[in-house]
Image (cartoon, rainbow, N blue to C red; front, side):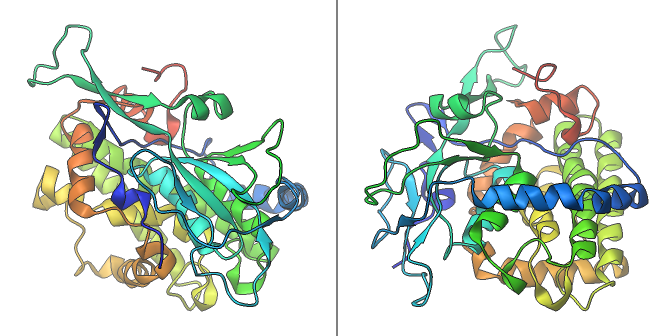
Length: 374
């Protein structure tokens, strides 16, 4: 039997603190063509990164026989839950995975981990959530206090910025291997996707990063572009208080999705890479594509993505395909639970780095660790 998943099973509240939160990645703005040239020129250093990533964990550790059943008082574990192929490796890299069930940025890493679940094991640690505190005036003007992130001590130890996802090297429970004296950490959502892919040892169509260096370069450009053009506007629609600003963000989102739709025609599809190979570009967008349903609830029908839109037909074919993939479907948070969580952004009571960045007038991916701290 498969272990229960934290993104659906964690209690909504614990010790007066609600489990919930997002964050961002990606920096810089370049044209697609110049970014592609830069990505190709950096292939040598990227190959060195991939090589070093495979050595970034302890020597292979023996897998445990079964998954531990999670409950509120213990962290979740995805160790060996019956999905290991009979001819698979006898041991895999193991991580303590600092995450948050509601966070779409962490969701990227979760999909990568689940995609490589036969090769990479992890222990889920719910390391980021929410708690209410009074604002400077003691009120929000809406009858409730503002929501701020709480961050676990372990998360802050390994990632001083307090952001998820963060992967920390560790010894697998029951393996008999010693814990690393100075455990290393991988962070930033798109980086962790590439890291997990590299360290998994996967080859061919199981890779999330194409083995064709030209396709890998194109994909890195588009993973970044999707992050900026299709994911960041999500927060503009939710956080900005003026309807004109919200609609401007929604139109920017539509433009980004239409550009993505157009790029999909370069391969047979339905995924970004050919032959239905899941990639870092798909994973960059999936968490937000799943969450776009919240717009209609909080912003009305004018903010609904239309399946009849002729400029989004490839996007919808892509959407239906990726959401049905087992490694994606089992990571999706419950819609009602997530809808209740995201209300903090829709009513402007969330005080996260992403929300603060959008509130001061920049895009979500342009958040600043100092300016937008809370």
